[in-house]
Each structure stands twice: as structure tokens, then as C-alpha cells.
Image 1 (cartoon, one colour):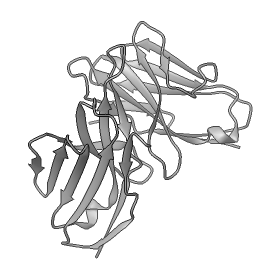
Image 2 (cartoon, one colour):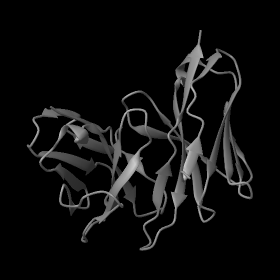
Image 3 (cartoon, one colour):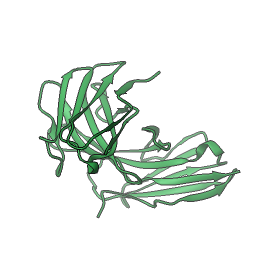
Image 4 (cartoon, each protein chain N blue to C red):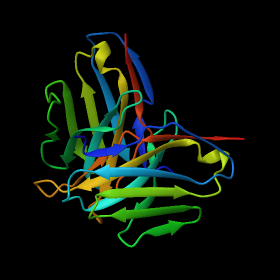
Length: 116
Length: 113
């Protein structure tokens, strides 16, 4: 069964609105969660890393005020795309890392965002 | 230079063929290596880890050459269901004790009937 869920699986929104994407770890408590973005025919690009109980660490070039990450609990992380623009249209994927191994990650099914 | 480089393909092969994918990584401090598979519009899924001694899982064989910073994946007896994008992934140590995965752009494989 699925280890990680994401909601919604796809969303279409108008330019200027905000969109919240949820990532849930179903089978274990995730001390670390990651958010990735993938544009068509490109690789997954890490946006930010969050550890439960602390602020997210954003990768270079990712605006923390535009992409708000809240690691609300050991099983839930949310990514909010604020004031979305068409160039934010992408495939957003979260992954979770259980505390047992430092490299093992489980990916959610992704959220496809289209901003019109 | 990209941290992880792959030939984007596409590799069009007939069923039953053997196909090999290559990958190079730039950071010699990289600790762990993986091949992921990604189907169209889906999330990536772990295919196999890559060990220094080389490892095999059924029709799939992975090799690692740390000196050359080179990783390979060999698929024997290709099946139609092998059609997907294969992502070379490297685990990069970073400050703060949170390692992160760096993905290559992927190599597209299309197995033809």
C-alpha cells in the first residue's frame, strides 16, 4: 500500500491565488520531509527540506516567502504556493524519510499544479 | 557542470534486447547511489540501490565506479513494461546532517514490440 499520500493530486487555479498541497506519511513518523518540483522533461529539483520542530531549509533560488512549508506534525507537511503565477505550474512531489536510515526516502504520488 | 548527468535518450529498443544506461556524478563526497524509475506523470520509485561491488536484481544489474564517478544500469531481456524514464540518483551529504538526493534528468527507455 501507499506509504505517502498527497492531496490534491491535481489542481488548477487562477493567477494570484494561493494553493496548499498536503503530504502525509501513512506508515511511519517522518522526522524529515522533502519537497521537490519537476518541470516537463526535467529532473526533480529539491525545493526545501524540513525537519519536524524546526524551520524548513530552502535550496538556493527558492523563495521561502513564496513557497511556505509547514511541517505540522511527524506525519504531515504542507506546501503553500502563494500568489501563484503560470510559471509556478509544475509537478510538486513530496518525500518522507523515516528516522531509521539516513538515505531512504519514500515519494508521494505528486500534485500537478496548473496556474492559468 | 551538472551534479548528476545522464544521456536523456530516448533509447528505442526491441523486446528482448539488452540496454545499458550510464550516469556520472560530480561530487566525490557522494555517499549512496540509486536508480529510480519514473513512469509518465507519476512519482519516482526506487528500482535498486547501487553498491561498490556491483549488484544484480533479476534482469537488472547496477555498477558503481567511484574512481571514475560513474554509475551504470544494465537491463537484460527488455520487456514492454520496462518502458519508463530511469533516474540516476546520488545521495549528497550536506551540512546539518540532512543528506539530500540529487536526481539526474533521466534516460527515457521505450521498448518496442
